[in-house]
Length: 78
Length: 78
Length: 142
Length: 142
Image (cartoon, rainbow over the protein chains, first blue to last red):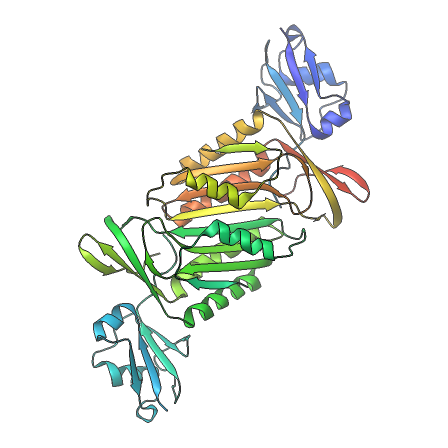
């Protein structure tokens, strides 16, 4: 298995893709996942979710996890 | 003409009527109106309106006015 | 803006939808806050079977207009409405509807809240509850 | 209690009425507070022609459930609901509906307000606006 990586909104656009796969043996933390797939520094204020829950960059990740990177959210209303 | 006096809710029930007329020459203030028609002291916390606007007991009244006496209001919701 | 005192069943969501349909908000409104008060079947630990809401016609409408206009001066709102029942009510019947529309949610919430709070202390309505122990006038509470 | 994320037009008052019809509030509810956010035709002094709301399926629902459950722990509410649009929207389209039902109005207001505020900072939605100068991602504001 592997780690599934997902990108949303501006980050998805900047990276030119909405998804990636990472070999779990190459990474220990969410921050490692970003470094492995992005090729650019993590933009400031980027939010991270591991398995659909908010996480810190240092959070450990493992085989089968889904790790997502996205900008601050802007749902709701005025 | 005269002054029309109106009673609501518990005060209406206590006085046994919802309306009265007072000769305007007999009264100068809203408190006078109560004394003239009620025969009992003004219950504490009674609200007064003159011509459908909240008023103090000392407010002057004159021919043609409508003076109302009622308990604290209880509209709206829980 | 819109005040109605009615003695027929209040259908709050239909009222709000109908009011909006008559408005030309035209993309200026970003937020609506609506409050609906309904009759409970209890009050102060006593079962309430039914209720009669007495009011002071003419003064009621005047006071509700004044309250809504105060809210519109205090906050930036596009529209507001109040509909209040009087007469005989059964548990779970809607009693009052307050709605405020604004460009921003803080303003809509604040105006709606202001109107219902002011209404409770100033609008001349009086509730008489029918309980197991007979009829009683509701005392004012917060 | 009830979370829905939809890509079809949101009819907020119909949603609320339909939800209430499925509930057995049975006289325990005295207060409902409803917030509806709609799309404006302006933002930061620029005309907005249309909008696309992207979201993170699965996480969105999970986060909205978490927020609603927090509100239900913080305040005494009987029920709550959230419906949020995604996909393409036009000015004046409803975006989000939040509703809370309680025995008391303070609780209903506070819970409704809590949910919309938390939603804005935590629910994974992103707005892209189409303006006269092209598309732009909305930056987070208060």
